[in-house]
Length: 163
Image 1 (cartoon, rainbow, N blue to C red):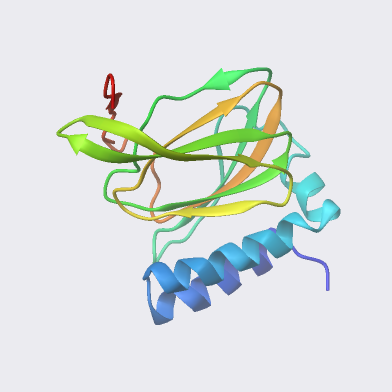
Image 2 (spheres, helix red, strand yellow; image 1 turned 90 degrees about the horizontal axis):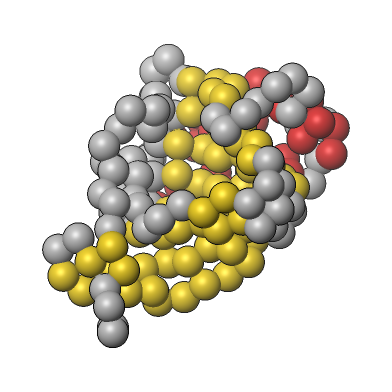
């Protein structure tokens, strides 16, 4: 069966309505991974101008969002979290170098690992998890957010020197 935005949203809603917890989000990540394997689904989400952020779906009851991101050329983001929410990143096209961090002092982090996300890769970032994406080429992502993150205050952290 071909994946559609409506079907993906319905499946996510069914999972999160039962329980919105880390294990449930891993199930949602599995749905997103499956959707990213469907080239027709990807083409449909990027059929019109997306830009840096386009909310494709926002659930009226649970508040989660399905968001498309399209970045032209290189782009770096500093270490940050998603405030009171979580997010699931799905790489649709291009590659993203992700770095994960741990706090060493208030507002200061050290890198704990880095990994390359390629098309079809999906990663869950639960509340409070600090990470930073870096892109050297144009990329497309589909992201599931626990709530609409537009305007949400997030912790921006500095990488601790010499740690």
